[in-house]
Length: 91
Image 1 (tube, rainbow, N blue to C red):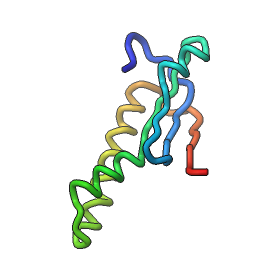
Image 2 (image 1 turned 45 degrees about the vertical axis):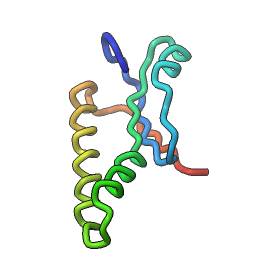
Image 3 (image 1 turned 90 degrees about the vertical axis):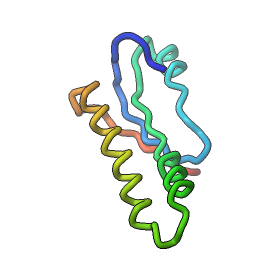
Image 4 (image 1 turned 60 degrees about the horizontal axis):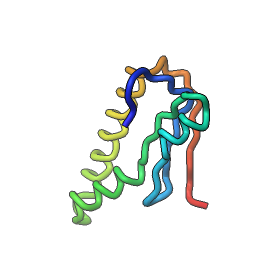
């Protein structure tokens, strides 16, 4: 959990299942700078859990898109929208 001011310098979108970025460690290692991380794999996992039926495929896509849009809205509140983007993908 981030506390205090926000000094995000990077956006990390993580596609690697069952992993997440250690935001506090990143800040500790980079002089207090913060990375805004988003685990998109988790949104996909939640969609599959909540909407498991084959007939719910469109709803799964909408669920993930809604979570992505909420995350982008949060990012835009915390930053000016000009941060570099890093995508972490499976190896």
